Image 1 (cartoon, rainbow, N blue to C red):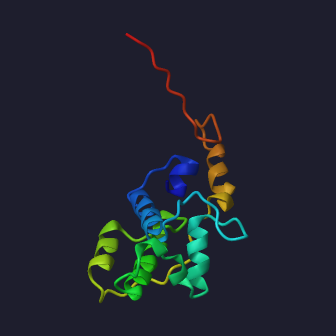
Image 2: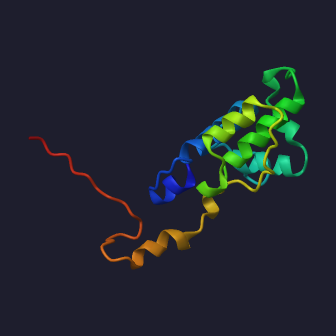
Image 3: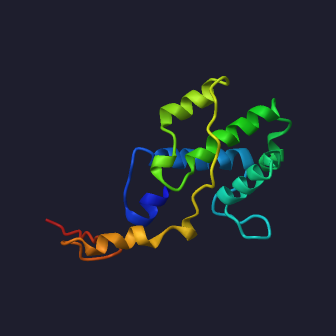
Length: 149
């Protein structure tokens, strides 16, 4: 689930891009995105980022995949997935850009930045809506009552 939807209930055209990036990392690593890895209790996104940043991205690849046809192709997939899981929707590529990056090896890939970290999400953005008139709750939660006819 994209950070903007999880924390603010806002869905964007790039929310699916975030989910696709998480799915790619799960497939490549064989790990769930909600698990914790390493001694620092990192989630999969942070774990993948730390490996990528320290130029050990090949360690993310699941050994159950066997000998991948090309390690450079697997690393390219990680390089496509990491920009998809950026904190803000504006920092993510469009899905058409992702398809282009996956289907054309000659397309230059963006340099990945640190991915979203839901535990470190800024609360100032969430609480900034509290000053707007008509907002009854600072957490933007609504309740729907189901009544029979």
